[in-house]
Length: 405
View 1 (tube, rainbow, N blue to C red):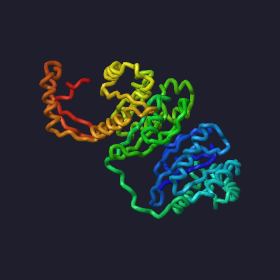
View 2: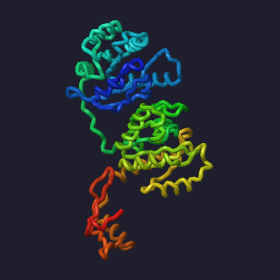
View 3: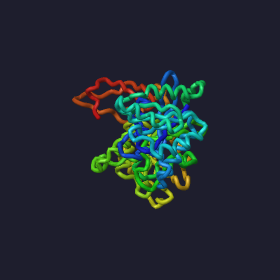
View 4: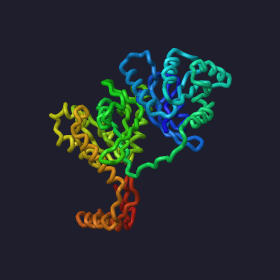
């Protein structure tokens, strides 16, 4: 069950979604227009589970190309939703943009609840009465900042949901695939090409994507969740710019890598694998997910020495991730990238039999003896796998004091 949260720009939709979901996943800032793509967050109330869809601010009068893309994303959210929450600013009163949205929603075949946000003090609750004129029923006064009225709003949402059915269990074959990288290397274009539709907004300006956006698809008969993320710049550049929005979007991108099975680190083939690409790949590997580097825009960078780039990655990154080429524009090699990502997810979730590990350990010791310190040699006695996702191994030794990095 999905609940779309829509409204005019800067009425507090993302703050309300965070409050209702009990999370801080949606990026919040006092600047209008921070949310652009639609973002889905799980929530539960009164024994019902549902998905909140945070959307960008909808201004029907704005003819800017980016604003039109935001409106398209909001319309897609409405098409998916079982219930719609129209968020308005109680302190600002009814504005023309609110009336235009209300007119659109009155014609939609879906229950609509008006949430009068920013009633931050008890005396502000009476301000919600003005929104009866929207013709969408009794408005719910509340405050995303303080949590005032959110329980009443959730009660209304749950009452408007269709009767509960069997809740689908998460497929054990599900693979979470995060698409991360520097700004403007084509991450969103790659995600749209994988999905076969314009799911996330693409623009030539760096920094268009701000939230980590989840979307499902099926690859080789297996369910996959693709996570498009905001571009990650060097921390020194983010600090120098003083942009708090970028700080939080970068944080969301890092969290996306932490909860992924596989991270696709997208690089610009025309620039080769840069130092920042290597830092991002190291961040992904440190978070515990399998990692694959994808040289996107290969249609523009065919003169790049691929062997040199692969050798550089192998020299700089200890886990030596594979480097593949692809083109979001032409679709070249995208199927191969997905197949390789699924194979990495299987390896990350797999277990190696203990006898096989100990044969490997014996061959390793026979090839190269461990070092000796002060006349005592380190003996590697036994090896076993102790975890998966990511795989972890433990080795028993004769004395830990002889173990060095």
